[in-house]
Each structure stands twice: as structure tokens, then as C-alpha cells.
Length: 397
Image 1 (cartoon, rainbow, N blue to C red):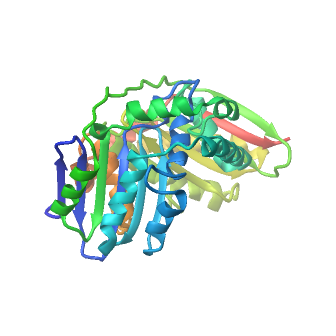
Image 2 (image 1 turned 45 degrees about the vertical axis):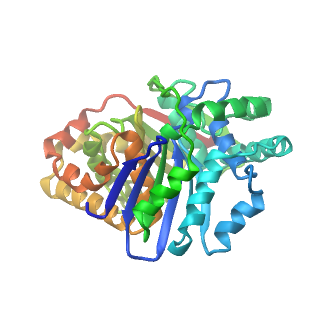
């Protein structure tokens, strides 16, 4: 793509840039570190560290960090996933220097104030409680636990007990060992100059190396039921393993996913909600990384209807063997169209470029249509042979 640029700087940092005409830029500074690389003892430390970055750096207070972006009309945030922690902002392009400086300051210079560290523990514990008390979120966390053994199967946020036991020194040591320039990506999408971005990044980022982190999640397939007082609806999650982000077979599963649970036109939405009236919420999604991959389907229903819904899901997966060419073609068109619609959001494009780079090559982001169109009907039909899966049900007590 003529408007895409990529460069690995002398300090080890990889810079990605897509030029756009609109006077807005999205900026992210990201590190190849997330909960997948954690042990049972420190599960949640990457997410906790992300919180601490916003509590102040060596040169800016918490308020100054927010003010420098927001008072220019921008937004800023961050997230922690299994394999990536990303600090991003979006603001008018004339303020790109502020966007790069703030994202970079967060990822390079956290203060880790001792008092703030202890205070933030309780904030994260309340976040963990919030996820637990949200039935839909809870079953999605639990389906991962049904699909993978510990520590990978544990929640990204960790547990209350683990968070209470964490020390500031433990976090500082973790930061120094993994937040190194050679394993970071600076991604920018918008109206800017690539050479100027690289010059600024060369000044800001120090040269630093580290050992490459690896993880090897152990798959499993379990089914479990949890009863809870105070809820009126049953929440059901169905999950199965898929190819990883690096595996070209992921495109086969994406087409199957579009057919099975890709929106209101999907076969499961039509069968479960529209034809049978068994649920309001019928949705699914993929979670793919360099070393893991799974699909999860969520249904909010009546507890006495869970068995019926499970049968419908298994039946429709099996029926993929009879997938028609017209439906197959529509799913391809749907996925290609959804990507184009998503590309309109510069922050979404920025994020996907970064993820593809950590998976091997950001340039693959621009080959999506080609990869989807290369999938053959028979390859999708083969998913009908799926034998192993996991389920988790949260039902009223």
C-alpha cells in the first residue's frame, strides 16, 4: 500500500505509519507483554501495571497526562490483552507531537508511586468484582478457563488474593525486564509526516534489549455449571479452539464464524432468537493470539432451555458440511465489508496494524481481502467435523 510505511529504528523500536488526509491522528505505543506470559503467582500484573502508568510518570502527574491530550480535544486510553499492552490516544493531527510524547512517556517512564500503588490495588479489586457481577462478562471469562489450563486460563485481571499480595518491587522488576524498546511498536495512523515521526521516536526511545518471552498454553475441554442467587436469566457460553493469529487457517474459521454467529443474519441468531424466541442476546467472537486461538458463543436464555440451545449450536456446526456456495460467498463479502467499515476508524486501523506486526508482519493487514478470497468452500465445510468443545452455564439459584 502506497500510504503505508514501516521502519525499525536504530534503537530497536518498530514504527508503523499509515497516511490519511483527515486532520486527525491515532497514536499507540505498545509492548509485546500481557497476561499470557504470567504465572499463577503474578497473574494480573500486566493489567495492574497498565493502571499504574496513568498514575504519573517521572515528568508528568496523572492530571498532566490527561490534560495534555484532552485539552487539545483528544482521547486517551490503554488496554491489556493476552500478549500485548497498548497505550493509545487520538487527537487533532497538529498535536501529533503531544500524542507521541504522552504515549511514549506512559510506556517508558512510569513513576510507580508507592502510595498510588497501594491505592490502585483496591481499584483493580473493584474491577474484578465488577466483572464477576456482570453475568455476561463472567461466563466469557469462565469459558476461557474451560478451554485452557492455568495460568493461561485465568482472568487477565487476576484474582483479589493475587492483587493484594503484589509488591511494588515485583512490578518495578517486571517493568525493567520486559518493557524494552526492541519489543515495542509505535503505530500512527492519520495526517502526519513519517520522517518526523521517526526522528521524534529516535530521540524519545532508548536502545534496550531483552529475552523474547514465550508461552505455551495447554488446551483442555471442560463443561461446568455455576448457580447464583439474584439473577433471573441463565447465561450460556460455548467455546472451541481455533487456529492462532499466525495460522492462515484462521481465515477459514472466520468465514465459519460469520455464518454461525456473525450478527443478526447469522444462522444461530435466526434459529435461536428469531425462529424459536429462546433468547435476546445471541453473539459470538474470536480471541486469537500468536500462540492461542478460540471462538466463544454467548446466549442469554432460560435455564431450562440451555440443553436445547446447545443442541442447536452443535447441529449448526455439523450442518456446515452442507454450506451452500451462495451463503459461503455472502460470508466472504460480509467479512471484507466489515473490515472496510472498521478501517474508517483510524484508531481501529492503528490497533490492527500493531497486532499484525507483533504476529509477524503489519503488511498482512492489507492482505485481508486476498486471504479471505483464497479460502475454499470445502475448507469451511471441514469445520463440521468439530468434536471437542467447552461450555459454561451460569444459572439462577
